[in-house]
Image (cartoon, rainbow, N blue to C red):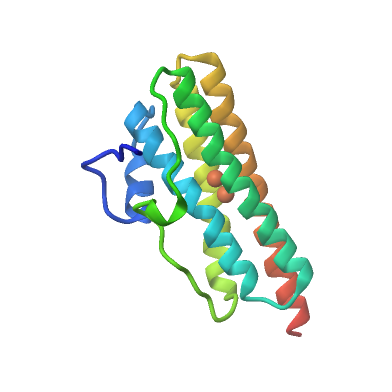
Length: 165
Ligand SMILES: [Fe+2]
Ligand SMILES: [Fe+2]
């Protein structure tokens, strides 16, 4: 059975905002971040289903696959810190919800670009303050990929905007 950290906000976005105020992640924080990352895969897959542009869908799916990788990297980091954690089945993740998007909205994607960049910044801050060198490296790697996600979302947005003109 997975032991979910208690005392955290009920939604992924509020929990993410709280973790963004931390200079360094505690093990409990890292478990929460792993759960958030786990739901990010489904978020991107739901976005990918909202377009019939296969190039755009492919960019979003790649981001989704990497979000799953982020969750697994955090699980690995928790193991290194002596706080083993197993990801739950997605349906049991407290931040999971079935998402559906009718369409991809340009403003929504522009906001997503910014929040991915913010995600990189968070990870770099957490890595800067993480004494365990290998854990810090894992955090930095996740962060670097968040910036790449931002670039892919920007590309998706450009493709959609070109197609609509
Ligand atoms: Fe991520
Ligand atoms: Fe991301």
